[in-house]
Image 1: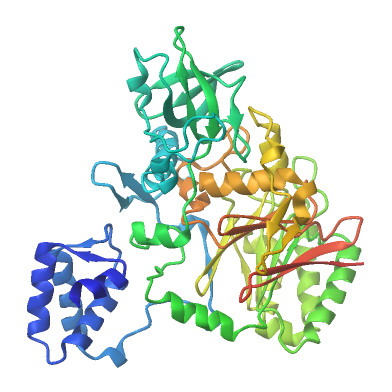
Image 2: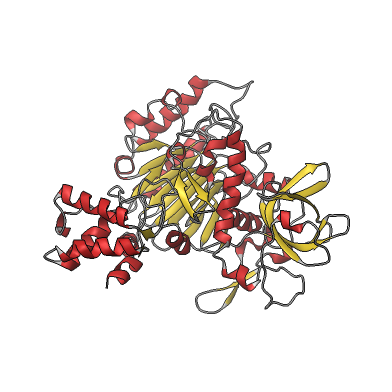
Length: 548
């Protein structure tokens, strides 16, 4: 029973851990309740490995004794630190940072505080941490062990694929190898792949690619041979295969990569999912490019608020993504007074809708054209000096960072305002292979239906790239600047439930890759109809709408 209980919780006991646990249980009046209490304490501890040792058990027992709750399960606090509405808004700048130790095969929390002005080593750590994150995920992939990551080389599908370090390629020729590394262009029109052991020049002219957008700084798996001139001629190029949220949680002991301040244990998930289903009418509203300097935006918002205020259940969450002015802030446009006046006007409008103001959460995510310290990611939330009277008149308003990560019971939702698709497509080193795009899927009844986004293949390529790279912006930092020591705030690990991408370069779009949905709400403040979307977390259904 002991090992089974720990296994259900995603843990396992070492020899000394088992002895310490048995000794503790033997002194308890009710062994079952005592074990449940011990597991509950362990579930709230930040463990760096799923193997629980004796000293960890002893520390948990001390916590139980100090609190006087060794067997009083009814007095235990809930393990999930969410609000009553199940919504936890995460700040990108407060997300815990973890670094993977390849020798010990575990993640360690980086205890030193991250800084915006970091030393040069921070840039090195950025690329190393991205590479190690995907390498440790790949080590668990069945696709890799079965060699199904081949994308068309014509080799035997039952052959075994093994990664070869770049350093080991020295002296090897006329032998098919698989290498994994960061795709770079160290010289004009000359591509290279780098791993932690070295660098090799690659020839991509005749390679076949999988679904995705292959840009500089992406981590790839390349199949090919070393030519006599030392160049690695790539036959097939793909991304490291993704992994389900459940497998990632189990493998990493459910560490808080998301930044919600609490971890999700396997034992908690059924209860959290049940709470989601109890709120079957709950819906979230997402808008992007809410231009508060345009009267038509307020006319549309009034119609939108009228419609939702008349419903039996008002939306639990309304996310407004920038830009919040039609003209981006810059050297020639920096009218802060007019900017804050837009939020004053929005706060006045919401006073006419007391139900929305009291029952809905309002989250504001800044865009690339909103005032801030710089264009680098992540972007901090808008400062009170430019948000007018919004916080005073709408107490349930929250000015989040960009990206904004929101946990809703068991779901991880990511809101990102960035014109990402055009940047990714423009920086592709190889044109994407649109033949890999899905045009039809099989529904729950076994019927083949056409995919709505089949005429927008780039959005499918983008979804595959983000999920497999486990990163929101896998671009060269020269094209998309990132604060080096806050790169972990852009990780998509474990893969989120849904990504809401406010991208002005793309119309309303919806696709999915593996277990993650990627969707774009469209532009609310443009010349055309005011586009937005609603998301039902209980069913995962996304619906597009527009206000004339």
